[in-house]
Image (cartoon, rainbow, N blue to C red; front, side):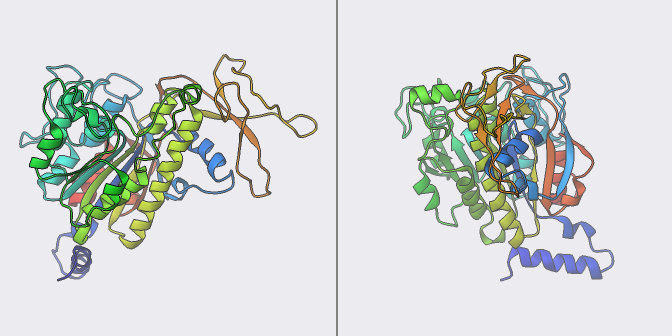
Length: 437
């Protein structure tokens, strides 16, 4: 029996030679949306020099199509994670506190389609019989992925959000946040449950047909034909987003070494969703750049982007073999306003071992071990020089500007000029369905 990819190629050929055959048949395929939360082009520029050097390319740099991102909300010029995700999932520009609704209050209107269903592109894909998954390095209730599967009056409604995620019947849900799935006081694999309603969603997920897993080993051992999987790989997030100094004081790793990486989760999700050549939508969020950025932890941001860039490489390799796939990526804002800043060299070519804690403007500065530490050292440039640099922060909150939309694969040529946050789901709809739904 021909694979789904072979059938799509046949449809393309028919569209070219048969008059009246639907032209959009050649434009449909799978979509991977990757959201490196809080990462602007400036964040990526600093990560580039540290990870590969100023004259080399990250996988992010190799994503060919680019547009300037416009991410304002209905009542704010800077997005929240939940407001931005509402735009990315629905195509509707809501208010700052929205979580899949028009605002973040109990009586806010829900964003519904003409059939009265939550107007998320992921729900539309499920209704159309496509396979859908979400991957999250943070906790399951993080809006950048959760809003694609459910809405809620406010992002603090954690118990309600994870119920909605399971009831969406999405095929793959991977991330942290076991605490939101177990009754208060019940011991889980990673810690105690915290649900006030005493529902055990791990058992409920199993009853809904989910294979429930908790470790990297279980993830990597999943059979390719697993229909639905819920992966809970940490009590909360798979990382510890605090300042560098607190990580050192408490002897905490940036990322849990026992949890699967973003690339491992994404690779497993694609394998399961695409099994048998099926069309799919996968939403992937690396939450680390935002959470570490909001704690002004530059080293944590860089580690999060290293993991994100590894994931880009994995998806790019998949597109090489499956050209009917769109990779699209954007953040919703710039966490902390991280900027690379030169370290002045002394007359003898050396530089100071310890950076000042503040710039003359009063802005916090970071070195490799945090505030008041030695500078970062870039990877070699084309002449073999390794230059020092420091990071200067604008804020601990999110700021606007400098975010890019990038795309590769099917329909990527539509990413150009400037794009609104609400344009992202429209491109996803076009790729999944051949026309906006």
